[in-house]
Image (cartoon, rainbow, N blue to C red):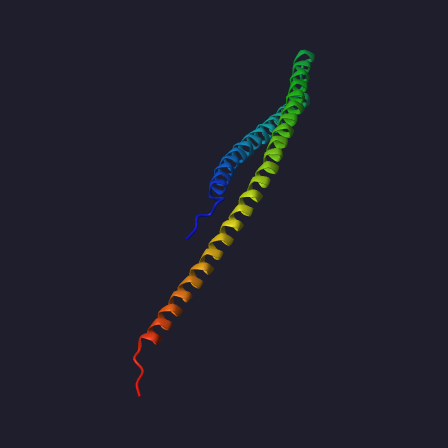
Length: 148
């Protein structure tokens, strides 16, 4: 059977796709971590705002109220920055995903060519075997003595 001439490219495509898959998973993990941190910040902000409301109902001094407001402002800034980080990591993942799709498409195209090569080689082998059997049958027919 003849070797698939594009096997080197197919092997390279497999390695590139594996590496891209690993990178895509890493970026997805980073994106998820950023989302988790954002949720933690939002939850903390809600808890802190609820604490402020309770303190307001119980009575709170102006310096403490200013501290609460300042901290809530800092939390809002941190949340906005984390939202940007989530968007940035999502964009990185989306960009890598597009690259991954292109690599997968190339690898699949090479696999199709490989499968066609195998099918063509199998067909050639079948034809060779049939020709060989026909030759054996022809020789066997000629080798038989004629009977009267």
